[in-house]
Length: 234
Ligand code: ZN
Image (tube, rainbow, N blue to C red; front, side, top):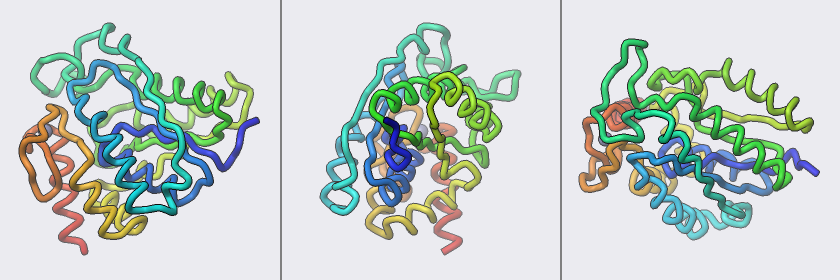
């Protein structure tokens, strides 16, 4: 039995997925979470997950009641298939195809397929992910058209109703901060600033106004610019 109001959030511990978690907790009666290990360099973000769960339960008790099981799935075959700057110790750069070499081919497709299988077993009818096609790195598996095609494939292949919700899809990074503010006010914004992790290099030694990170990798640059634009827009 699949419940249309029970959700599985793809929750890596980053800014986007933390905002998605808050979005889901404000909407669905039951929320479970999933993360994937695939040899990512910034595995430090996974260490922030229990910190964030604990903080949500303590600071947002009405959300805490809806927050249930957490799952971690090993997809290390993704790093075995090919070297990318996300999974191997190579410099982050733009490729000839116009994509940064942090692009892990098939990653989101794999994440959503594994998530859908887990959701099927757990009776969860909604997948929630932080995919965003606005000012993101141009990953083709973050686009709305990819999501539309994949949800159709999942519904057919599972023979079950399954939805994919991507609340950040058409938001800029600045608007993602606005959404967090709308969902949980200053408390949630402060929690996301302090405890979520975005930096591709896994650096949590330097604290900036927008959080921890090296301040130089593409993920840090996006997060910093978005935070600055959000502050300027308030
Ligand atoms: Zn960084």
